[in-house]
Image (tube, rainbow, N blue to C red; front, side, top):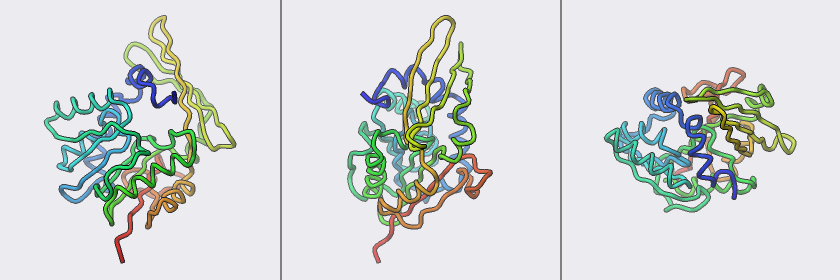
Amino acid sequence: MSWYEDAGLWSGFADVLFSPERVRSAAEVVETSPLLAFPPGSRVLDQCCGVGVFTVPLARRGYRVTGLDLQAGLLERAAADCAAAGVKASFVCADAREPLAPESYDVIINMHTSFGYFDKHEDNLQVLRNAYRSLVPGGHLIVDLLSKEMYASWAGTPKIVDVPGGMVVMRDVILDDWARYRTDWTLVRGDVAEHASLTCYVYSAAELRSMLEAAGFEKTECFGALDGRPYDARATRLVVRGTKARPA
């Protein structure tokens, strides 16, 4: 079983993965980001949505949102959070590599480094191809992650994140000549420690842009954050937006 299929990891480390700070930040970004401002009523697929950190605020803005994730337990929490917020969204429990109905969405988003999970590069490319197929002509795919350039500045340095009642110690290890990385997590609460490891591909801006183009996207653009700033030495995220061409 691959790490992303482990329901225990997602529940055991939920305080890190879906912290209240992350929820608040996502809500603020949806309200302010020019990259997440879509035409009214847009059909949005939140790919690898988790507990709906972005699904809920996007639905609050009036978009017709569908959250997709492989973990049924995360989708149950996302649906409950939508209900608590008084908004509606649809949810699909599926693998992001699996095809959906063609030309069903105006926008597809993949947020907060939820890309690169699969063990084969070709499978990660298939996620982009599937997104291309699922978009209407003129539709956009937006991928938000930490890039290879960003990992290079601090990979290998242990990090400590405080969580309720304890802390999580994180350490990254670079693998396969910078093709992938492994993050080792240790959650400590009192005398109890839990361990987990996540292995992902890590892509540079040029690599991810080439992947979108290989999947069929045109007019690919790179940004340094969801506020639309340039992707340069001051970037805090890598955000790549690709457009599906309209018929000539």
